[in-house]
Image (cartoon, rainbow over all chains, first blue to last red; front, side, top):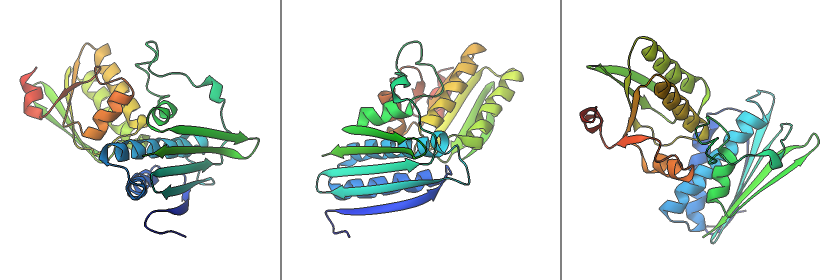
Length: 140
Length: 111
């Protein structure tokens, strides 16, 4: 149930890059309802796009048999999004800093770094055979 | 995402429209740059006027293009970089890597 100041929307989506534009749009819409200004709204949309990109590409491997679940939650001054994929997970401790001089010119490995830079919290949950869930949260 | 290539003298201008999100479309731009390099082009402008935003995969595509042009001692300039793309460059500390210009003409004048 939603009102102007708070609400929830959950979507189950195919593992396709085409869903990113809609996710970008919804992040902006619900972030605005939470009370964010243009600058932070842009950063929230960037982070949501990264989380869904990771789920589609790295989590589900763009498989037509796997889905991505995205849950937006917003209330006064708080925006949260939870993205779940059906992939095999990864070792979060092995994620490298892409801004290290030796990795700076790399062509991949920036998604999690970007999420962490712009959101207040980024929490990953992984279980054997349960896929990966990432929850991103930011307050005004 | 779509792109068109136009030659302005010895400068190849690649105009992209649509969001750069990785996948087959991004491969198309990389392959176009590769083709142009093989044909001898060394001066490139990528016009992002029609690109509202990119994700990290699209950023990876730009990095791959930058690296392939650098490897052949070429020059790559970006034009019409949106605030959002510039923000992504800043977050990832790549703002100083890319040579950005407000317009195609200003980029051309700099060659």
